[in-house]
Image (cartoon, rainbow, N blue to C red; front, side, top):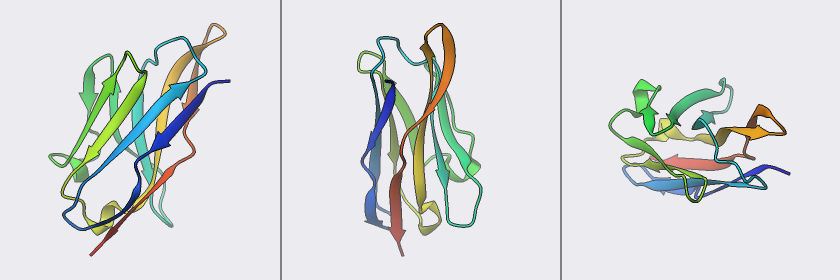
Length: 119
């Protein structure tokens, strides 16, 4: 069974840094697109950053210059380095990946990891 296993969330003061990791388990295929989304209380889930075959896209203007997405294809793992964190970055962060499964490209989600930034 394919799963995305996230780690690295927590509580940090404003201006601090955190690094999120998301590893694919249960699949012998490398993920295609991988990305991070977040959802703050009372808000819709939004795309933070996405990486596709080495081409990165930071789709949230609010994180440009502060967050960096990267991936290790050998480990089938995606990372999100978050620097200069702000209280408005507080949210549950979800990993997302498109993985070939039984001949179909299937979208998977991680369980979510809480990031809390105190002022």
